[in-house]
Image (cartoon, rainbow, N blue to C red; front, side):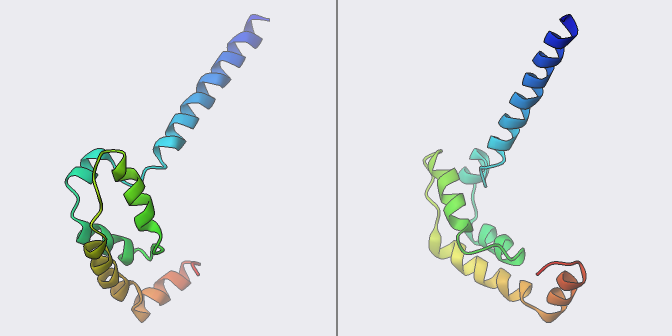
Length: 101
């Protein structure tokens, strides 16, 4: 009986920890990243990695929690530049060989 209670407690602790970590993973940017944000660079990195256009919504939501407003024009300018690199044939070939769509 004592082992059952211990196992149940351990399971709840593991489940709680996993839930906290999962919720932390929802924020696209941390408070420090929002406060010091270089929106062109953030957009560039997102474009370079082929992130969808709606990724900015995740960033805006994360930063709004810290009173920071995203610069949409700079983000889009950077994302467009990153997408130019992402969409190069060599990168498409590399991603295709790795099994990506």
